[in-house]
Image 1 (tube, rainbow, N blue to C red):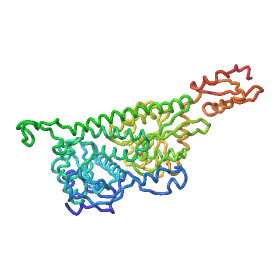
Image 2 (image 1 turned 180 degrees about the vertical axis):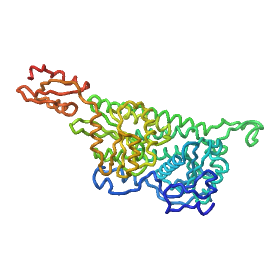
Image 3 (image 1 turned 60 degrees about the horizontal axis):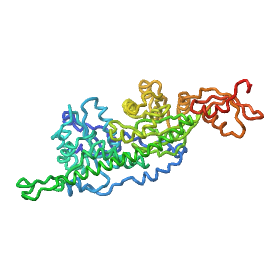
Length: 512
């Protein structure tokens, strides 16, 4: 290991470092230590100072989960992964790209570093390789795998994270070479979701996704997992009478996992009526819905707090919020609608999570308007747009009106602003931190919301003042007069609440 391979805290976070001309020729790049560029540095006044985020009641609990460095690596003492103790991990990143540019591959590696840091690890270094296709055995190839083993040993790392989903055989073969634990991008995302899930439904969804990921990756351990045979072919030559029941332990584990998955699916299904009842109540009352979707850490929760002061947890980390949060708001002309903050997306989002969180994503499919939040300061906003739209299409929400919002406009330079304009000319530039562009966004949402269109002439008795309130909340009151027998109202209503007012409808001539 050369001197240039050692971490340098003064260098940029995960910025690519060309170690030498030999490294360039070898087709790989090393990364320096630091914090991931996918997470912005804190700058300017916090949201809490201005009160836009409401009371951040969950922040103290979330910070209590932060892991701190404690034990040094046990690599020299314990070589088997199964015996290593749980603690803050020092990790080395690996990745390869078969197509695209170096910049695309670097952005993916930066995002992987941000995921690792959010999960509670310290990124020491990384290796990125250009290759026609992944090696079927060790993912990187035998030579590069041995090189990673040298980096791990020199830096006293104890985990290697691959920027893809590894096959179980690739993971085992790579662990045999590098002698430390090897996990993939999917495992890191699942770990983050497991840490951040709070609601009963969210925990069940994450556990289901974890079990689906774990099932094909169960590993045997010594003789307790090996099939026993009778006669002279016994594993230890034990002879007759030694035929056992087979791979009892691993089969038992598989059976327990299948049983637990069935139970979790049943629990999630049982929670569905409660969600549908809440949603049906909003539909019955003709309350339009606006869903806020976007890439993780794009600022969805900050935007929701800026509009409604909801107090949803805001944190400079990936997947800070998982559970859908619904808050009400009103347009400038008094129309009531709901704003829903949804789970963030990420490139190569594990299929297990998309399936497990489909119940949460139903809020997107049932929305009247989708507010698509993009981090305008991100190095690759085009990939954010494409990734989120893939998931939107997958849940059947492609036809819903979409408002593209470029958030963090206070961090966007003029040149980058021109690029974003070219990417989506109708996009709205906002800043949840400063409030810039919020009024334009609210006006756009107001224009896209469905409006009452059925005109009714009503004579409502004075003792039914509750109906007047419904008209103001969910309809449009055109005129109001007070007569001896009640209130004469001309209003526009939706088809959903029309039946509520038909008993009080009168011909126009009577009210005239």
